[in-house]
Image: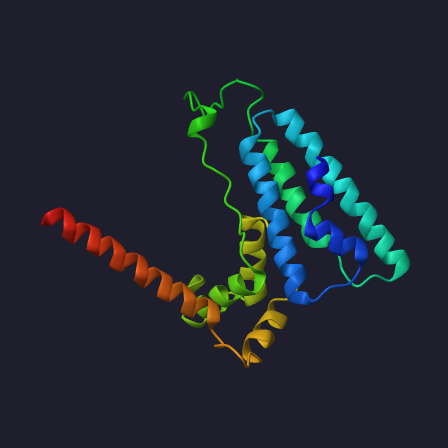
Length: 203
């Protein structure tokens, strides 16, 4: 697990100070590395103890931050590692089959773990947009509750939903809905490419 000790996230935590955008990018990189590790490794026991080793390192860094007054918290990384550890508990041991009822569902049949590997503020932009359209419980739920649900579901900690909204509103050099805009453009481009492929097949 030496490669995790040299990640930008661990380095910034150890230094104790970084720009918010750089820290969010480093956390996103860290969670993606954890996800890739869990997907590639097949030995549940090895994954389980490796994650605990990483968690211990993060807790040590967090304890040092408390003592030295560092500005960066490891809580986001710890929360993601905790979610990954919980996920390993549902993995089969070695080559044993995962059973569901009397079925014979194998490891290859099990659904993959889905995690958010983008920026937290981009997820919150999607959540706020959907909430504005009353797409969550017909609008009868708070942003904080929705953010907590998505955080748990996607293995990411969203500590300050309202703060993300303030940052979106204060954007000056870019669109206030930069993520939604880029998502719209990317989806339209994808559709255009698929339309073009279909047109070529019909010729």
